[in-house]
Image 1 (cartoon, rainbow, N blue to C red):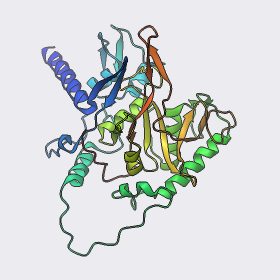
Image 2 (image 1 turned 180 degrees about the horizontal axis):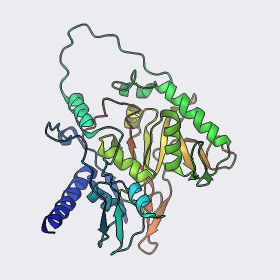
Image 3 (image 1 turned 135 degrees about the horizontal axis):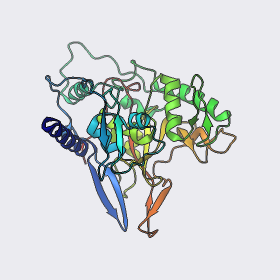
Image 4 (image 1 turned 45 degrees about the horizontal axis):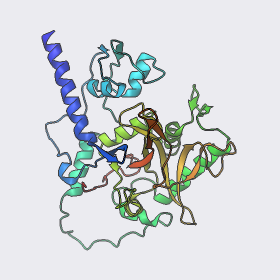
Length: 359
């Protein structure tokens, strides 16, 4: 019993420490409004390769966890090394609401929180990407021409282009599948059964992103926007969007760094029920022939093709626009939903993750 109690306390403390370092949450006050910013990991904070660290966690036996004061499903998942989705399924939870004293069944798998890229592979790529480049033995080849669809994203092609689909091909695939889904008339949050599935999906933003990634690239993602962001952040593949002098997302930075297939994340578009408070996700599609930036996903209005007026569709991407929000403090304070981060699954750029200096 003493060994078990010591192990649980150690695991809890370690998980809390890791969460604090990985997420780096800060609170910025603007007038009466509190907004949480995700501080990016700089080169100085990049994890170093550790030869002795195992790549995967050993399986743990199934056991019971008793909910304590202050617990959320997300916090429990970090303590016990299981995903939030696995906790929901194991305990047949329809929502994330849990009560102190409740006993939760922990899944037996004890898998890594993200299967996108092994942690050691990410660390190795970060070390290689940040190390000085040795002089080439032969004359370097001429640089490849930037993609015709999204020229501004050409600087990010190193490590991705030539390994997976090109930017133009990705845009074509995502547009084709999104338009096909939109023309079916599926509305926002409406039940729809994907081909080959036995159960209906609520076609909100995160399920639409899941479906499109599965259809276009064969990649499985978590159910919620919060979990999708967290998995990518843990793998070093999600980054905070810098702010310009006016406190808005830096459009020039996005113009340089975004590429087709990136996941776009918003926080606080409604009162968050999860931690981190990511509440909305879409897929970046690049630009159309008018120079307008596009995204795919599911929203309540403003799409190009969906006859229902909402739901899965192609939408204009406006990074500086406020989206949704909620009231707190008895209705005296309004928290505005805003665009805060981008994520890049391994299928988009398998080798070199984006390097961003800390603010």
